[in-house]
Amino acid sequence: MIRFDSVTKGYPDGTLAVDNLSLDAPSGQISVLVGPSGCGKTTSLRMVNRMIEPTSGRVLLDGRDTASIEPAELRRGIGYVIQQAGLFPHKTVLDNIATVPLLLGRSKREARNRAAELLELVGLPQTLAGRYPVQLSGGQQQRVGVARALAADPPVMLMDEPFSAVDPVVREQLQNEFLRIQAELSKTIIFVTHDIDEAIKLGDKIAVMRVGGTLAQFSPPAELLSRPRDEFVAGFVGRDRGYRALSFASTGPLPLAEEPTVRLGDPLSAAREREKDGWILVVGQDDAPLGWLAAGGLTDEQAKGSAGTDLLNLGGTLATKAGTLREALDAALSSPSGRGVIVHEDGRFAGTVTASQVLARIETRATRLREGAIRSATGVCS
Image (cartoon, rainbow, N blue to C red; front, top):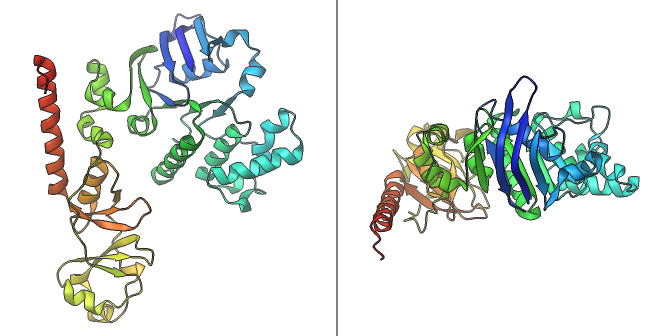
């Protein structure tokens, strides 16, 4: 556990970057620091590995005051990932990752073997091992940065807006990969971001900080969305926090409809006849949905051919059966057919659902929450 015990960081001109911060970041979980610019997020993060020294108060790592640990020793046990990856430009990918194990006294062979394992862990092919950072995309560089931070198998990781410099699609991929890695490794992580959606997606607990370095609220995401402590927190989380809260509400058993499908490469003539004015879902050989095809918009020449990717509308998102109400509603609203595509955990097509069906489930949930709140307020037990 990482504990901030009345930590303050002030500067000679009187500026308080962090003011009397107290919170416990639980072991094996992701604690996210979020807030506007100038609220002390990065300063707080950097006080953990003593890149910045507190003016007063203590930072404790598993009960041990970090001020009693030599900075070099402390940092060897903490992984650190920053916005621009910070890779050594003159070293290959493999040697970048192997840097810390080599510093810790491992042989070159051991360090490189460990680096090769981590390449696979962060989802990078071994063919990139001999390349230099300049030859990688931004997303690939960030993955290498995460791999390097994991190279010494540190129990603690500090991550300072590591995904903010890449485009939204790559950012989502990196977030998902990061959650997959964390589920496997269970590191104690402090993660800094300015993006409340990223905080809600990644955080087990979220610390909302105010300008001036004070803590406004430190709660699990669902509690932060449903019970913001004051107007500042409510405003920062946003007016659509009710929609965001659906990310923590399981869909339960949705009334899935069986959807006529056509496999990629199959003839389109029969499908066009069956759905003259509608949409046809095209799936691959593994039954994974690939996209929607507008049957009514096919020319006679196209209808004589087979289902190909060039004809597909890729606008709709996918939701899983075990997913959340937010995912299911987004799938329905984004679908060109008006029918959200639901898949099994392995990606196979499960059925479709409409927005009205998801909204009905949301209304049922809202009614139960209102009734529960009334019972709680009046002291009535069900």
